[in-house]
Amino acid sequence: MLNVQVAAALEETANLLEMTGENVFRIRAYQRAAEAIADLREPVGTILARDPKGIPGVGSGIADHIRELLATGTTKLTVELHQRFPPEVVALLQVPGVGPKLAARVYEELGVTNLDMLEAAAIDGRLASLPRVGTKSAANVLKNIEGFRRRSGRTPIGIARPLAESIIAALLEGSNVQRLAAAGSLRRFQETVGDLDFVGVSDEPKSVMDLLVSLPQVDRVLGHGLTKSSVILLGGLQLDLRLVEPRDFGSLLQHFTGSAQHNIQLREYAVARGLKVSEYGLEDMATSTVRHFDDEEGIYAALGLQFIPPELRQGRDEIRLAVRNGLPKLIELSDLKGDLHMHTTWSDGSASIEAMVQAAIAKGYTYMAISDHSAGLGVARGLTVERLRAQAQEIREVAARYPEIRILTASEVDIRADGSMDFPDDVLAELDLVIGSIHSAMNQTADEATARLLKAIENPNVDIIGHPTTRIVGGREGVEFDRPEVFAAAARTGTALEVNANPSRLDLRDTDVRMALEAGARITIDTDAHVQGNMDLMEFGVGTARRGGARAQDVWNAGPIDDLLAWLQRDR
DNA sequence: GCCGTTTTCGGCCCGACTGTTTTCAGTCG
Image (cartoon, rainbow, N blue to C red; front, side, top):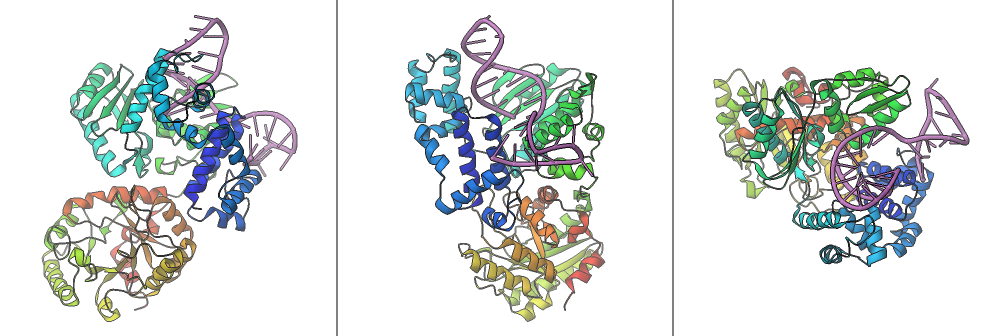
């Protein structure tokens, strides 16, 4: 049973308990445990076997529950609860506006067990006839069933971010808005977002809201007020814009940036000190005085905490670290001095070497690597040894014309199914830099994939493992392998692990970055650009690395060229 | 059910909105 399945099972248990009217804190315990387990990068059973107290939010009771799940695929508690509420009824909770209480009542009082039956009950008036449910509630549920059926799920950040930026730019230019920021999961650089939350300040709110609802990106308007408006954008993403008094901008931004778990923990921390945090300020409960914050920094400072960057607000250990000033100084986009993974027309890229060099110079980089595919990747016009050498010659010629940047000869070499490399060792040794990547045989067992990666990592010619898990955001899961073993090997051999910045990859992902760094490995952050404009994707890689706690000194391509060259020449 | 440099018992985040009520439960973020 995978961690995601364990997490889903705990989440379902929480929902079932809530339908029975169970103690809300017991419910919250299951929800917290589910979130903690979804974040783990090692099998939950492995961790519990090593350290039964090793997962925050999982105590002895839920640990037993998980062990039972792993051993039998279900639990006595779940079976018992399902006798009262079948799984299909729990699925009704996915409809907005249908919570545990309503789902329980439509089942018990109307016999509704699925979406179609709920829809029928909403249409024929039985839903509205329930106590404390009226015609408006029933109509709302009906509308939300339609929306739920159309909905495609969460939006990748690679799509949401440019969209958000275009809207922010339009509002800043066309209306009288003094401050405007995107909050929510977008600001935290989560790999997918559920909606867009904007926070702003304006002394002419009508101009801002009127412009928002009339933007070409807007499909339909849900609400149009002076302090809050909601719209559905083309493509189905919802955007909420809140405007506040200047003195509360910081509090509102903090509130809507979240995450939910971070805010819960922050407020618990505040309560223990006699303080109450909300989007309207910080109240001293003894004196009832409220402090206002026009920026976020002030809130954390007033609580005696180091400022917590949005990417770290995950409800993990960030508050505990901030108390003792122990948060890492995270890498910034401006720390990067080069991009070490890109393609050209020599393989499957669509720009020449020279065009890519000019783009890298325009980015302010002082070094870069040209890393086209090896022959094994036929679909990408991978290079034979002969073409690789001819390309190296062209790189040297281009390099002579651009002394302001150091251009490394490199290749993204296929790691074959058995872990051998797609170029012989003596050819690899001719290159300045070698990226080893998996592009095939992705359905190996974890043992096979681990051995494959270890063999590549142990090869002294391999410097970087490119997109190590091969996962695709919202698509394939990627290769399963023994992460502790592979990350430890990377640390031992000095092989870097890539954070591929392409928003459809983000691989390593945030939680893997953290695990790799804790194992002592270093990373690179590269765009895998196939055209000049792809180099702009670097911010997504940096955001992901920051979520994993990466500092500049953890990232090879944030260091000076001399350090980079010394690293590349190790063991040679 | 979890958790503790205030606690091994007694707490557990905060507020808005909606629709239904006539004081509040449910849902959401």
